[in-house]
Length: 154
Image 1 (cartoon, rainbow, N blue to C red):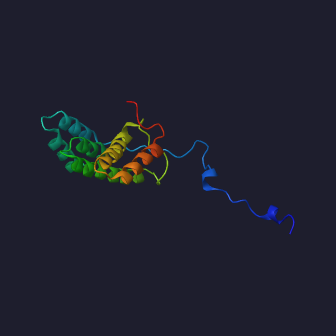
Image 2 (spheres, rainbow, N blue to C red; image 1 turned 180 degrees about the vertical axis):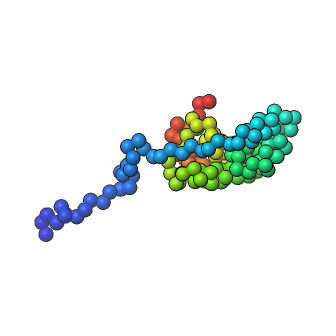
Image 3 (spheres, rainbow, N blue to C red; image 1 turned 45 degrees about the vertical axis):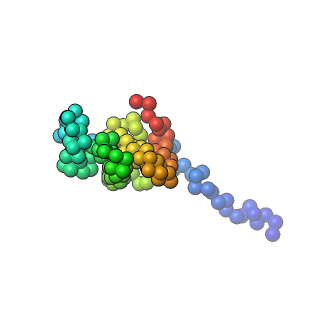
């Protein structure tokens, strides 16, 4: 039938749809308690930062920067991988609690987001070190999706 193609609705690819004028939503994590920040600072300046940071995460298990620092001070790459992975998963929980729905920006420019992004970057690095390349690649892509300016310059 001539002209019937004009009556058929055009299917739109989802990537063509922009629901906001400014792009994806942005999530900024809430600040850590002042005493947790002070405890982490003290642990990092102590003679035994790893044990000090471990005590901080035991007291504040949702403190993402502390998990990232535990990974930074790990005894080996497997221990680092485990700490970064916990920080990453705790971070996903915190992001969801702050309104993140699985997409949108989580930018480095916001100091409260740095613990999560550091843990995710550490997870990528340690995953690559233990030949978990699929996970490392997923983490690298996720970092760029969360903050298109990744990696940070500071």
